[in-house]
Image 1 (tube, rainbow, N blue to C red):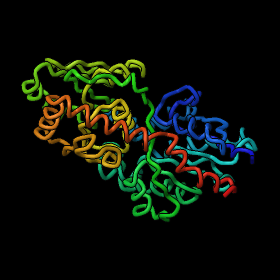
Image 2 (image 1 turned 60 degrees about the vertical axis):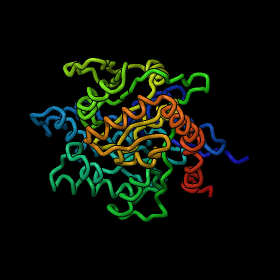
Image 3 (image 1 turned 120 degrees about the vertical axis):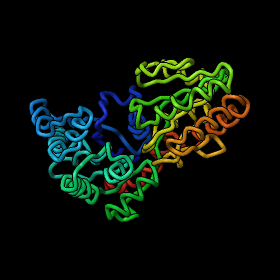
Image 4 (image 1 turned 90 degrees about the horizontal axis):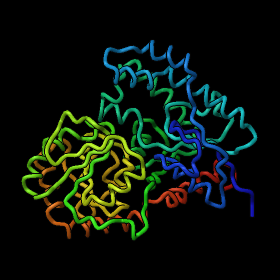
Length: 375
């Protein structure tokens, strides 16, 4: 048997040990490392040294703190600083790997990326965010052109690009000019898949929301819809995870704040419906997690979400910002536990069949082997 292809990961997530962590992307490294063809040597996050970070933040100072952080993070100076950090990481490991596996495109895989074969894994592009959620990419025309030029250069030099959705793949082809045969929509896996006896009964009329960016994830629409849901479904409860803004206090609403993965698993087991009426999204991991726990989802047809859920089969899709449509969908599922369980079972079956990191790794395999010259 040939020696496995040695892969080094570059990921902005703070992954210290992908074998035990359950962050958003850690599962893809575990799945690749478990495959006989590959060995993941390390996963490291290119960090900007604190003095340089402070200089970049100062240069992009804005009155609005969120916009300030967003613009400094998605600045050309930040891109170059992370690229230098990636170069230091890769130079220190030179000879210990054959292929670089980079998640996202907020940096290049080193200053001399043409020396090293690399692939990328993306959930979106900056142009998608700029068009669909401008507050998340509030670049002026000149800054946008500079960023997209750097982004496109990284895409053009990549041996292959993997995307979490056809939605993101289409952007790379149509907006960045990448050849279709160099981009594969592999989807993404599910980080929390319980054993059958740990799924839960899902009998109580509990709707679960998980999201840190409350406004972007449709939280205000959900709160405006909830009073009508609570009036229509006796005993209905809404649990909100990821934020603790209790100033919007409503009866039957519980704010959980940020919680540990074990606590989130317990909430998935107790809830009967998952709700994410997001205004803009890419490929939310929480939807796959909820489906894995047998929860039907009430969500919106934005970004890559329609590629994860099946409207009327395991989920109900509503229009972003449509309070009445959201109310009707929640009432339908919370007042009919049998229907909710049947849809949840259909979603779990699909997760186990198609939406695992192992399946993602299988789709990536031929292109990673090709990048290492093993095809």
